[in-house]
Length: 178
Image (tube, rainbow, N blue to C red; front, top):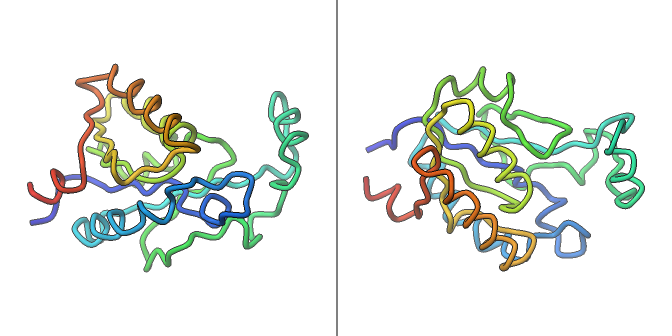
């Protein structure tokens, strides 16, 4: 049985998976197997997102990229490659932490969304909350998300739990079990 709606795989990219990266998510490798199982179950209803640096940072992003100058790379930099081949599935790229917006909405419509990826405390939460605020049903697969640290992951999960019933927390087993 295919789960309902769309699976959104947030920023499963080298910049977050490479242990030598300043942005490495320590449990990145651990969340890949559950994400793969979920992607298999959702079939063609999977969309991947990618974080990219802007060509010219503006506003508060200028100070951000002063701190993280290594990340000012062009979109085709290996740093921003997805770690898995999307196999013809849609990829939505954005220069913002949150990926919810017109481009992602054009792919997934009104959802519902099942969200996985990295980092729970940055790009995942920044995608989930605006989608939920727009009225899209969202469930976050807690064991298929990795944070900047375990504590930051837990804090982000707690914050998202405050948005029930707009945001539901679940596990891979619960999604795949029906």
